[in-house]
Image (cartoon, rainbow, N blue to C red; front, side, top):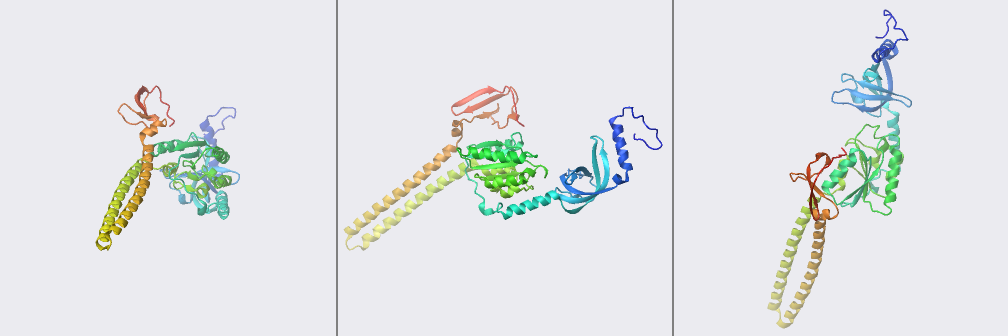
Length: 411
């Protein structure tokens, strides 16, 4: 307990518990009229509102930051968003379990635009005026990419999720990880360095596009993707850029500058990887329609040729001459159709070759292996495998039965 005028003082040389000191500070805060009822102005940062309805955030200015909480019964939750400048009323408090100083806010109202948000809006106006957001300069992402680079954290879920989606949809495409930090003060530098490394690699190896992204987070977490030098690096990239930062509702300057914005990293993986199963169905349908069309056109041409021959034979004063002309026309028509059919057959052979390239056997020939469990189900995640469980590995030239010695899943 903290000392009151009616309680005897505790000797200063006697050790006190953490709880006693915490309560002492709490009492001092409550007894100070300047802190028991305080009005302060600051910029909202790191705002979150869980299902409980309480709001957790920080208020900051150019030099300091204070943790704040507004319980669900407080007034003005709708004004609490990252970058907003607000005036709050409340009281200073100690959160005993952690010993954190915080302001318990009872009401909030808007006071204008915060410094950070104002700077961000000014940067957007500047870059827009320079043409960095111009839609006319945005490049098309190849529909059938062979190699896609990903600039993100090696340890994050983004890289893992993109790998899983691409392997399922279009395993013919190669993924290239270019590691970078995704938040913090050093993140912009590492992102810029990652682009430099990628372009050095692209001097000798082809790269169709690059995904730059991270998962969701607070406005503070996403700030590296609002950095001016990162924006200019994306703009200067010789490789088309897909921005996939945060959740669907998050928008950053990187999204504005990139050639394409994806609402999430997983959506970016879907956008760059065509559906191999759907391609196979579409190609087979195209071949059938092509064959039916060719057959119909050949039949119609023959009918017209026979009709022309009959009319010429009936009306010709010199049947022999007209029969000769008809025969010449027939030969020329047959030659034309033969050349036309040869071209179409060559196109069909190319389509068939693409279909074979998409087939599972060809994929296995490239070094891939299909793993199945004891029930014959395909294994797609290491986390689903139990140690010492039986596994069947299918190679291009046969199968191998083995056992999982140990399991090391990344997530």
